[in-house]
Length: 107
Length: 241
Image 1 (cartoon, helix red, strand yellow):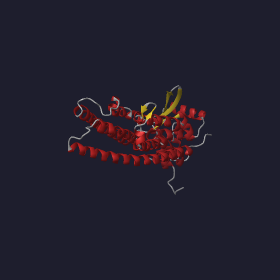
Image 2 (spheres, helix red, strand yellow; image 1 turned 120 degrees about the vertical axis):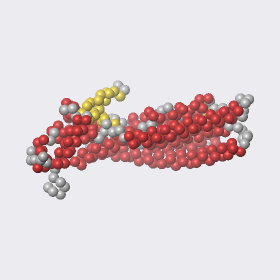
Image 3 (cartoon, chains in turn red, purple; image 1 turned 30 degrees about the vertical axis):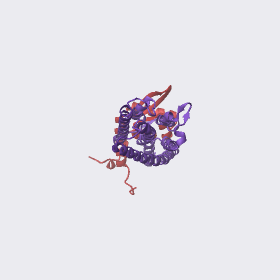
Image 4 (cartoon, one colour; image 1 turned 135 degrees about the vertical axis):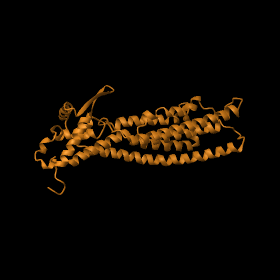
């Protein structure tokens, strides 16, 4: 079986849903906690509300995250949770990228 | 987005979540300060028997742990929830340690309650059959340790919080000790065993008071450091675009 670094087209196999920088950041944050509030996710990724909502919807449609809606008193609070599929996709992406990138000191 | 950026995102999220689930920042410092003030109040003979709003000061002191729980909750809400809630990944080892603290505190309270009840029976019912109380506290005081026990599993989130709560409860127990051991105890110790037990318990309580002072000071320093760490996390977050 050919290693990813031997296959010049391996980069095309990357999951584009994860590869997009904003979505990669979102999944990375979600993978580091059990549940993350919208506000924190927005602040930590530096995305604006509209962008974050749009990326979250795409990731939810792909089955990589789930939205949790709750109320704190009368205030609606939105949080996100990464799914097992999302975690697996992120793991695979890391694995693929490590294989694709040149080793340190070997440009 | 580069790899180091992703690592920073990971660590910021983990730190923020850990802070919300395990650390109490200024609440820890406040607990230390309250413990020290309680000790100083206890050592002041004028304050010991003082009244506040027509009730003995002691009645209020006994509710200090509950006041701390309320202040901790308010502080968490106002100071440490600014960016919403981030729930940390479950950490079984940490949870075990937390429950170890809660169990330890529960055992301490149970032991105290048993000593109190024994003292009550010995001093009030057996040694003083006429039923004349020497210095009776309100009857609910006898069951107060159980009241301290109730909120622990729900309200104490982290080990630091359990430590601070344990110190405050211990402090309030010290306020109760004279009532249990000396007011209800026999006025003229009938035998050497009881006298020796009295000396031993006095020595143990003096050591406990000293330890509470030390822990109170440490808690103040630690809580302040935690608060500064939290501010550092906030500063490290990217600014809104």
